[in-house]
Length: 111
Image 1 (spheres, rainbow, N blue to C red):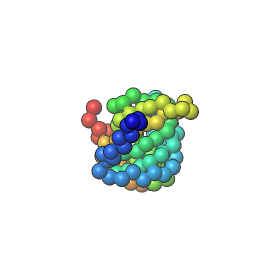
Image 2: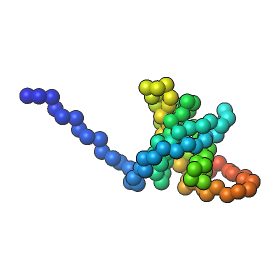
Image 3: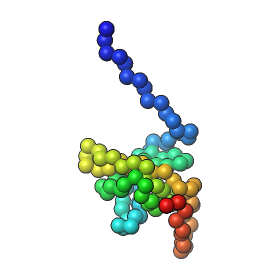
Image 4: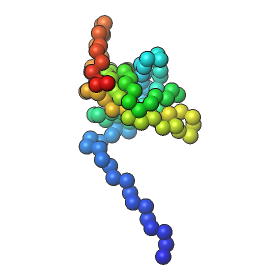
C-alpha cells in the first residue's frame, strides 16, 4: 500500500478569476502604496505588496490601468518567500469608473 493521494482543492468562487499582472495603488491610514496585482475578479483581487495589513483593514484601491477605483476589505495577508505579502481583497461594492475631475468619496464598507 502506498500513500493516499491528496484531495484536490475545490474552487468555491462563483465568478472566475482573471489571472493577469497589473500595477495599482492602495491608500490606507498610513499613506499610499504601490502594489502589483496578480488576479482580478468581480468581487475582489489578489495583490503583492511590501506592506502588510491585517485582515479586516479597509483600503482604497486605485486600478489606474483599468480606470477603476473603490474600497476593499483585506481578507487575508500572507508572507511570501520573497519577503513581500500576498493580500487577498474583497471589494466592498462594485468598483467605480474613474473620471477626470475632483472626487469626494465616502467609505461604503461597514466597519
